Image: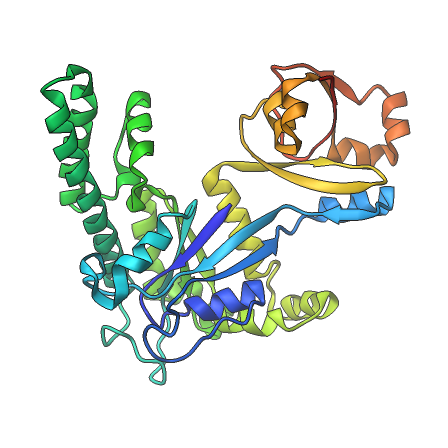
Length: 364
């Protein structure tokens, strides 16, 4: 999973990226501090992995991972090349989802590229640039489809959809918010549109607002209204606070969060929201050689989940021996779970569930 952090310059993108990845990306108080995208790979926090490791004492522990990419600040005119915009937009196209950082705090020492704090305006600026870039893609596809239509009438339905989609974009509607049929989903997937990507709006708040006054921040409330209309996720966060948390070890972090009255750090919340947004779950494999988490889409059947480990597992799938994490913890050992008949034998039609602990049987 690749998450791209986007937003205007000086909204806290690189500060947030540094905090959640400890990657040490350059961060400074001037536009375009980031030119090439900074990439960080982070482990997905999953306490189930730790519990299984205590049970099996494995030689290797492998959590699921996600790639987080800090993409340079976009500005008005980015779709026409302003601020090296075309280059930055191409980086976004490679992402699975967008983390759109929106500045919701006042600070006279940190300049805003547009002069003042207005989260709704900032979101509109970014969205319009992404829409303009998508319109360029659609214009080319419509032109190609119109020429192809003369000799191939089968492209008529696809061409009609592209024209309808263009009208929606011209009205300021992002592609992800356009209602489409199952057939049209296939057409949409061919385009790789920027505005079709799912979005989490990360509201970068001051420490005071984040720890005690979120509901009193007008910017945050404005972003929530926009997200509600778009069916997007909102994540209140304080990049500066995350920077402080990032330098602490596990015990210090838990104490620090407890003192602030915060249950989870920003990275944990960001990953949870991302998994939810993209419809992802994790299943687990456990044994003395390795305890590992595997990320799959909700609705994935057992053979395809096995294929995440190795294509031979899917090709020669026989069955999956499955127990839920919670049931295994209650039993204490896999042997006890088997004695109680809690380890199920599932076939090719079994739909995997989050937290399933699986042993795949296969033969090739």
